[in-house]
Image 1 (cartoon, rainbow, N blue to C red):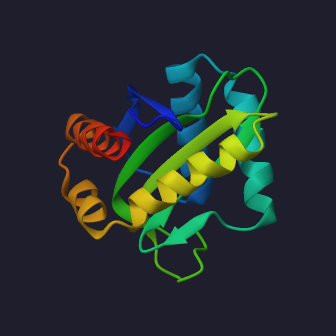
Image 2: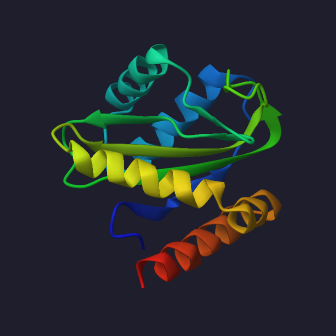
Length: 153
């Protein structure tokens, strides 16, 4: 897995969501269940960051992120949406891949490096296409682990 963040198999899911708020709620629930975090604390942190400006990255990808207390290192979650949802992205395109990142509240540069690694990953055309084509959570997780292991080598 990436040396910059960790992701558990249970933090990868294919979900249906009606809107941006539903995505943030599901992402918070996924983080809470996967990493033993408080769902309310996660949702508050993600919503607070989103109020600063959309984390819609472009090309159908959103990267909601926040810093919260109680973590030892950055952790990630990936949600794939069969039906794209408007996320107020800069390019105006709806999102179908949501890559969440939570970092310790005092992580500073570590958070930025993890965010940059996710950004690079999602800009890679082959990775983006493979994730978009993945049929289920197991395939998504397998792709992520292969890519991040390759990049770490």
